[in-house]
Amino acid sequence: MHPEDRDIVDKLVARDAQAFRELVTDSHTRLVRIVRRIVSDEAAAEDVVQETWRRVVASVHTFDGRARLSTWITGIAINRARTRRSVDLRRAEMEQEAHSALDDGFLLGQWREPPGSWGQSDPEDALREKQLRELVEECLAELPDRQRMVVVLRDIEGVDGPTAAQMLELSEENQRVLLHRGRSRLRTAVDRRLKAAAKAKKALRA
Image 1 (cartoon, rainbow, N blue to C red):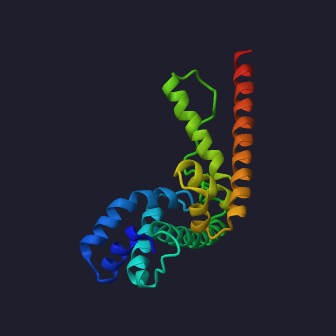
Image 2 (cartoon, rainbow, N blue to C red):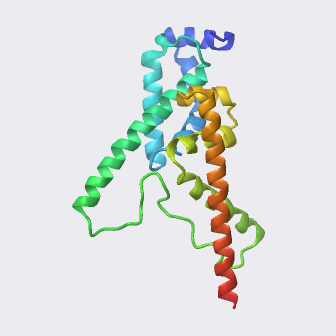
Image 3 (cartoon, rainbow, N blue to C red):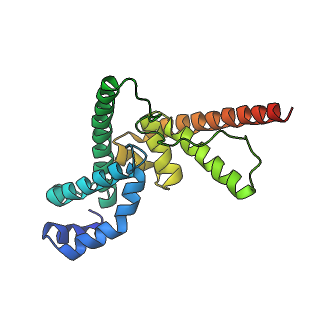
């Protein structure tokens, strides 16, 4: 077990409330940010992370130190988020069947309010950059689950390859393949939409 983890784990096993509060303070926001990439909305992400902390308290005595404590906790959060996503998807499908006439434009795990049509105006640079970020986020949300999570952990959260593999329960080779495919697919999707937007903008000016 890593020396920095041993002390905090011993304190958590001993039910040290202050140690737990410090751990939550250090990690909660990052976990919500990661989980939000999997579940439907911010409220669901908060619920999942709260469940994760309850699980950490209940099972920290089983932590064996083969991974860093933060990696172990993140893995719990990701697994619980995937379970929540599956449950919410089933619930959404049932609701859609029951209310087939209702269409609110919402797809679970994607955007409740998708970014507006690209290129219909001539925004200032700051707004243009904001729209580009939103476009990238939209394309990212459409990646297959494992590709999306590898890209999020590696390129957004700055997690190294071996740690990302541990968090997602992948081999390092599989992690590298998924990262390459995810980056390639993301670049292609963004490039395609930008070209389509530029074409539409040109047509509007014609």
